[in-house]
Image (cartoon, rainbow, N blue to C red; front, side, top):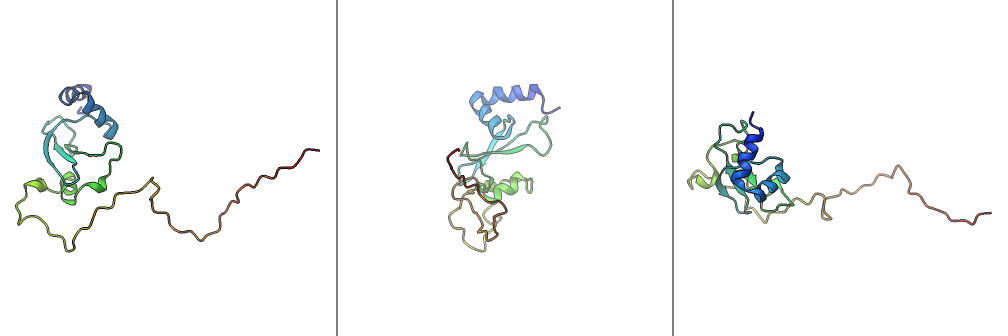
Length: 140
């Protein structure tokens, strides 16, 4: 079985305690692999060559922001590679093989979910529950 204690301890030994702890907090597993490349956001992409690893779970990314891991900050070429769409990572493609966008890409807007800047749609419906308005009176 690939999620065995032996595999976990072996990867803990290869990575070290600090990196393994970050991986456990990030995606509940300890993995060690070879660095394939990095993208413009600073994310590091790895591939595991160990035959004991679970099938279709041999590629993973370590995000630059530990507390805010956001898949929207992964470039499309790397996202396609992570999803096993291709075996060639984007940093190893020839210039004529790289795709060209039809429109220029502006500055990346981060995902603002669970922050003060999150999108909240305007609501015109009346609330179904009224708020409680306490009235203080003296006791008889």
